[in-house]
Image 1 (cartoon, helix red, strand yellow):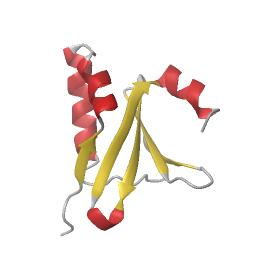
Image 2: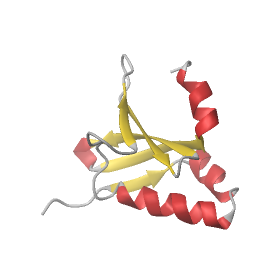
Image 3: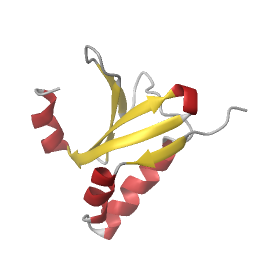
Image 4: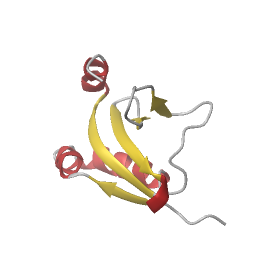
Length: 97
């Protein structure tokens, strides 16, 4: 059996999460835990690899309300949560990626 992945959360993402209502925090934390089992996207689902020219970045939608941006460090079996934001904020940012 493959070992699980460590999930690390940036200060920026943690601050965003801490400012949400408790119910939303619980939902997001539960979804983030699923990354420790398998951070890679499947054919269908909430995870997707973004097509960026020289930066490997993934995103995961949570409850049709939030987007998590993360990187995978295969050699260390680490998932780095870079940012969490509303889906609306994420869609505005896609043009800048």
